[in-house]
Length: 201
Image (cartoon, rainbow, N blue to C red):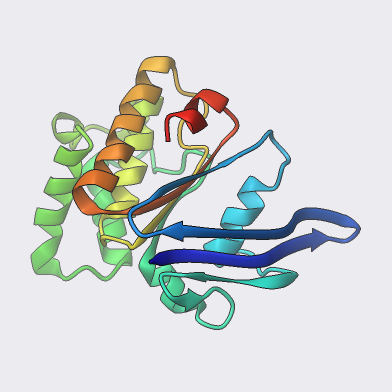
């Protein structure tokens, strides 16, 4: 069953066509990669699918909800990790997760267990009480993925999740992404400009 579909989805900025009639179908529990160089429209596509940017034409649904007419339902059904590192370096890993738990309206009684599980799943338990500015790039990326998964979304969007990481950190992030698919059945759509990463999907 398709959990994400687009039909001739397009986005234009004036005379520039950033995304041109994209039609895809992603099955539940699948990892789907958008491969292309910088400027190919990958981030624009993700911004449309996460309701951050309206399409110029075409249609798309995520988790059964229309991205234009049911945007709030789409946002409740997804997790999103942007390309640029976004965790707050002045807070600890635990504090970053706690803020996200509150933003997602996770009941207070469930927060501690979900945060603990997320830290353990991403291999960050020992770093939970360290300031994020002391984390490596790979640790920050894993923390951001943990944040995006706290509310158990149907679909997880990852925009260039390993950009700027060294090969070892990249490998660890990929291992955790694959575990999300295997253990939680999460549908994952990600972008990359690296052919070797696309081949590993």
